[in-house]
Length: 96
Image (cartoon, rainbow, N blue to C red; front, top):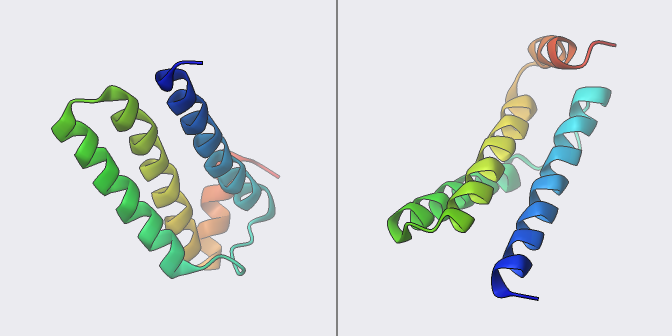
C-alpha cells in the first residue's frame, strides 16, 4: 500500500468520525456531553493543518483538514448555540 493511500484512508476515517458526530447531534439535538475546549482546540488545529497544507501546496493535507475544520466548526457552533437556535438549525437540516 502506498504512503498516499494510507494517508487518504486515515483522512477518510477522520472525516467520517466528524460526520458521525455531527449527524448524531442533528438527530438528537443534544450537545451537553461535548467539551467546548476540545472542540475549540480541534477547530484551531484543523485550521492550522489546513494553513500548513496550503504553505506546502499539498492537496492531500489541505482537503481533509479543510473538511474537518468545517465539520469541527459546525459541531462547535451547535455546541455554543442556545438550545432553541440549535434545534432550529437541526430541524432545517434533519426534520423530525
